[in-house]
Every structure is written in structure tokens, then in C-alpha cells.
Image 1: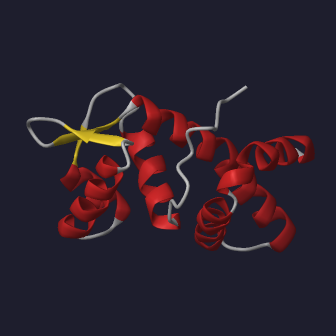
Image 2: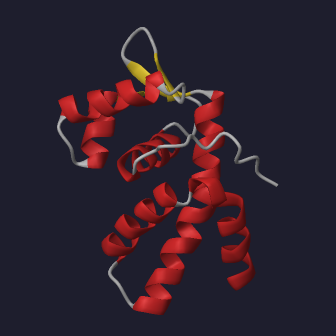
Length: 130
């Protein structure tokens, strides 16, 4: 059972998206450069830098000496909590509503941001429905 107590209140849909992208890019335990993050997110480097600063201040990300970024233990825990809901939520919306994948992802980030205090219940309901 995932501990989702570390999901940070007040996370925006964009911050959640960055967290999940970072989790994906840092799979091997290595850091990733902000240039790679900006490219993956399709945003400017200054935009990525700004969001990464916010995530650093929240204690979810740390920037290493040579500019590589990696998730902290808290960041990995929060990302796991969001990821446990994100995929099933997107699939449910695609099945039920027939929306395009991009629309489902955008909606899922917004739902996760609005439901942070109820993520364990949301995850359990999504699992029960699969």
C-alpha cells in the first residue's frame, strides 16, 4: 500500500505533471538536466527552471552541482501517489467519455490537483473499477 501522506497540498496541475515527468526521466536513479525536462514538457528552459525552483522549495526536487535535477525521497513518494491514480484515471476517462489522450491527461492533472486530500480513496475506487 502506497503512503500518499507526502502528496503536497496546493500542488498545481502543472507541478504534478512535472513531478510525474521527473519520476519517469529519473528512473535509473540518475539526475536529469533541466534542458531535457523542458524538451520533454515542450516548454521553454526558463519555464522549466521556474517550476523546478518551486519544486525544490517544496522539498520534492533537488538540483545537484552540475545542474542535474532529481527527486528527493519525498518527491518520489508524492510522484508514486499521483502516478497510482493518473494512469487509471486517464483510461477511465478515455473509456467513459471517448476523449483524446491529451484531453484526458490534462483533465487528470486537474482532478489530481483538486483531489489531493483524497488520493488514497481515489486510487482505491479506480482500482476497484478496473
